[in-house]
Image 1 (cartoon, helix red, strand yellow):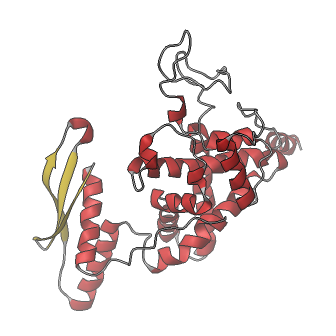
Image 2 (cartoon, rainbow, N blue to C red; image 1 turned 45 degrees about the horizontal axis):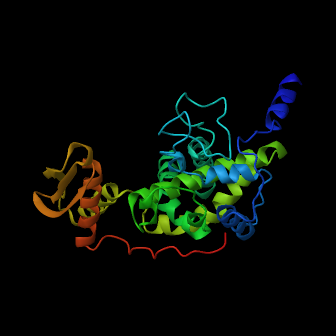
Image 3 (cartoon, rainbow, N blue to C red; image 1 turned 180 degrees about the horizontal axis):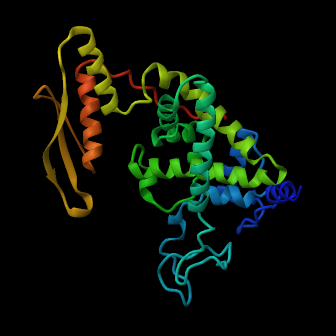
Length: 307
């Protein structure tokens, strides 16, 4: 059928990475990525895709080039392509486009996994599990276990600070970008989605799902607190309700800090601060769970290891 031929042709259409430079065994960055390939057992057909997946936009920040001045410009390794914006960097050279693709692939793989994990459930628990499996904290842990943190190319000093928000965001982005690169590298063989599903199952879902379900991590702290209060009310007949109140805000407009209190039946139980009111509410709910001895034990820090 013409439609079948069109689908097959589209599936086998190769993606042309903008970075076509081969592996350079003398380059420290390429050596780290080659070691990652060796540990994971995933050999990229187009090494430029792997290099792009681990390249943060900060690599191209404030590079002075003749005739271009200071701004966002690509390195000398790859020329500015036709996709570039005037005075800026070709978006195909760093990992943000691959991260966008990888985010969609991760959600699809998580939906597929959750649907099979809860074969008889309606969509609400499946949705909650999927959301819990793809949050940034989980992705950061998986990236560290896989050794991706040794491969990220960047020029941001905050990445070197353990526990910094910048480091976490860059690791989560790199994990999703890697999924996008893996898909594009394997798709001409018809194995793009299968490769993504296999990798996410091995590094994310099989590692996290049982603990996520057993410890109710599929609920965010506010939802978990409400669930515990509802269960207590059902068992005892005592009506418990939670509310949140903004206690304080301070700092400049671009780095505003908010302090929120969590109240149960009008009594302040805990407070927390965050860069948004929502973040502060989540923190206050988590501290309320801890003060009521309802929070699960903190998981151990992920260890580096082979995929």
